[in-house]
Amino acid sequence: MGNVLRRHGISPAPKRKQLISWRNFIRAHRDVLVVMDFFTTEVLTLKGLTTYYVLFFIHLETRRVNLVGFTPYPDQEWMEQQARNMTMEEWGCLRGCRYLLHDRDAMFCQSFRELIKTGSVNPLRLPARSPH
Image (cartoon, rainbow, N blue to C red; front, side, top):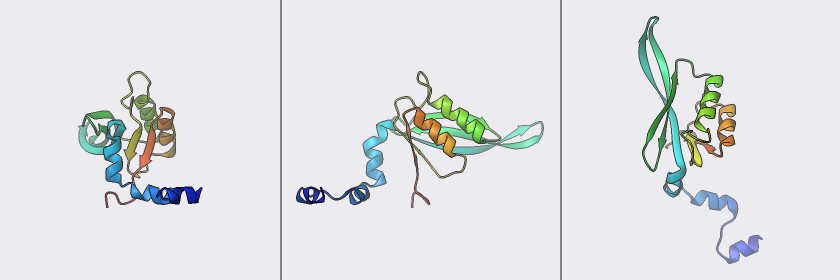
């Protein structure tokens, strides 16, 4: 098989992967690519100032932003529920998307990523120290 690839000028699989940069990947898939992250905000409550974590998504092609949820405690159970909500067949905000980019934050736990996969969306963890 390697001889056939060489004869046609095609690199072996590991080298082919290295030829596609993140920039080219994003350009080629931006119509089915969503990026997610958190931002924080301070909210004045009866208990004083409380930090709330806001989970949001940006669809790269349309630049549409969805505020998915907010909580002072983004634990595993809350994240799993957000994954179920986002991948709902009829009205989930990831409907029609194929890839979900996220950083390596511990809040994006394994069970969260598994639930995202059940909605036919491939969660992709960004490389360490991105974008460098």
